[in-house]
Length: 185
Image 1 (tube, rainbow, N blue to C red):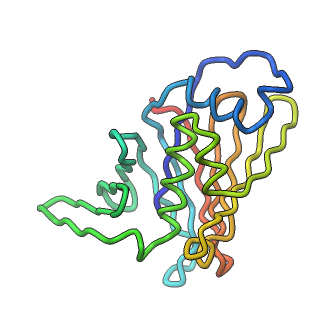
Image 2 (cartoon, one colour):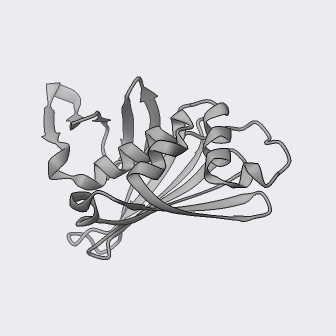
Image 3 (tube, rainbow, N blue to C red):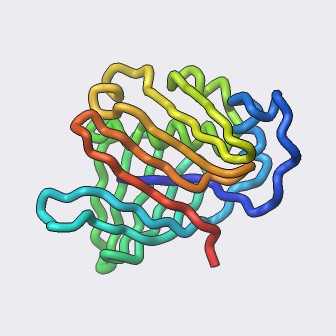
């Protein structure tokens, strides 16, 4: 539901074997610094004939991840350590425990570890497989947590050099939530 990441525009150093391991990748992404990102997310909806497309911007606020959507409606979504909150115009505010949406917990754990350059935390929370093709990388994360794994099949992150460009969240019911990132204009 909620997808967050860091995207950097600085060119990366040439590849080395060390830079191609998980620790090297997350360190490079973290060193690139966090920025506001534009995103486009596509998700299936049983209520619509076409997949739902959500656009907006993403950023980090301390230990919280914040997504401000512009379409299909304007709202602010906050993903904190133990809750997810939605805020809309007119003072609407609704908060949910992350225990109701383990997929959001998976996103939070993965993205904060990536932003912090914390490969050890990623390894504690997820089994992983990292592959490279020249300067493009693809990271597959499978949650270790049983409750999370009951909802999340895997999270796939792909990018180039030190930039995260796409995120695909595969849920166990075969639902796929796809997100593309670009730097904010």
